[in-house]
Image: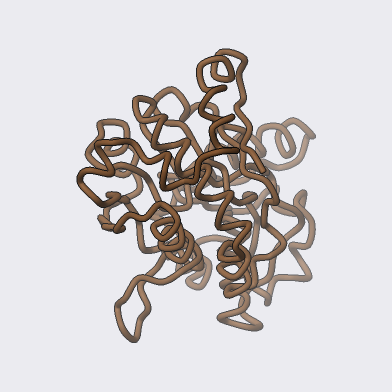
Length: 281
């Protein structure tokens, strides 16, 4: 199993590295400077279940991304050292080399590839959802037009929601949404509960998690308004490490650790069968 490169230029530059995946293990592909220090510095935002969060009973990190990154540490033969930070800080930190890799669920978007490169490992989408009590009123995506709909302002969900509103509400002659930026996933949930929002937009994995954790409280609305891929992110100056991690993801898919991590949180439907690089849209 190999991983894909998006552009011809990248294919030419990295062709040897991709071919090396046939003969080399992920551990053998780790760059010399990382191997010398013996650990991988991984930035993570532990506020987004089921991807990465703090267990409320133990305050220990938990989630799909934590399981996956820990499994990568095994195949890379490296200690994992997590650094908790805010979402925006993650991107500047990996671009500057302060951390080696972003281990948080971050969407692989073309606009982000100016400063980062991604090893794609999970499908995702921006899923509308609301309170189960309003399920009869809001059932399809078009029902959102004319309502107050929010999404975290630091994520790609907010501009995606604004674009969807312009095309599918205003452009279709329907009442415009009142699009509101929220302080994050937790704030989006709270704003719904307190009536400040009629609906919210979050990753489909988080919406599924909320529905499982609070049965009868929330319900999904229609289909995701966007579809993309989550990726482990690296600065564009650190592509050798990116390729080692891409091989590592291939190995944890093959050894079953990948499937076990997704199964632990009921996320098998979003699994990828093949690793790709910079394929998000």
